Image (tube, rainbow, N blue to C red; front, side, top):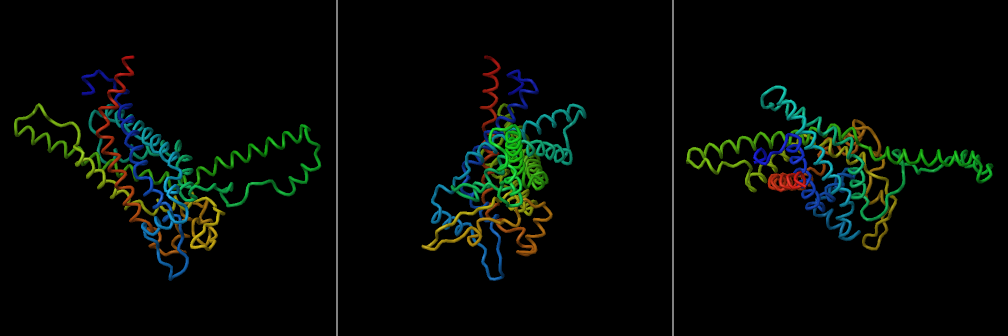
Length: 363
């Protein structure tokens, strides 16, 4: 259909990316409360042998009771923007690289090449959209309250006592005072920006997750469509050969592919959340009793800003090897449903995206 409308290869790639962005946004926003719950579970650290791990139902009840229903949607704006931008960049990079490789080789790419291209596309996506992912993750952990302005080591960002003494001696309005204040502001701004890339090591390694997911989905999709075409040819109904999956087929294949990818890469998922977790100093009222942030386990300050390997070692030392898979059930529930829904929307919004491109092209 795209060839009949006279779209160039670049426009076809843009259509693919636009459809992916629509699907990514729909999946992220539709299942956002589940995303918040699974992030809370992943960010909590179980200390003590007799401590029971919370189920997603208990986390939901505690969250609503202590912070209200609004906490379920804290950070939804950042997550929506991240998912839309992330999906658009991913499919734009993936489709572009895939077409160039196929044009040079003159054949369809195999599974290994597909995985490599998908990971490269994921790396491009992570480098651009990581700050949005960090903001949404921290907001989910903190709820509707503000986040402490701390650096990666969990310390307050303020001038040292030596710097303060020097500034006290300087008269206001002098050139040295201006330069000193400007330097402090720039340093503080760079530190805050750098903190938004906490856990980027895990995020880069996790590019294998969508690579596995979309490779499994594309391979299964190709086989299903091929089977449908062969069946249509046997029945003699060649005029109605399908070029896209049905809603049910897309949902099932999307769910299965995401489940496989999630199970294989989950330890990296939890390590990333712990590395991104902000320092929370709020107190939460529960049953008339004030609980500090540490007592209510809403943060894991000892993990924050550490390297991927350091986080994973600390998780094993604190919670045992099973701690690497803590929250897997909640992750599967959310990501499988969201991914299946996203890929279904993407599959069905492809024509809409193509028509939009054609309309803009004709203007």
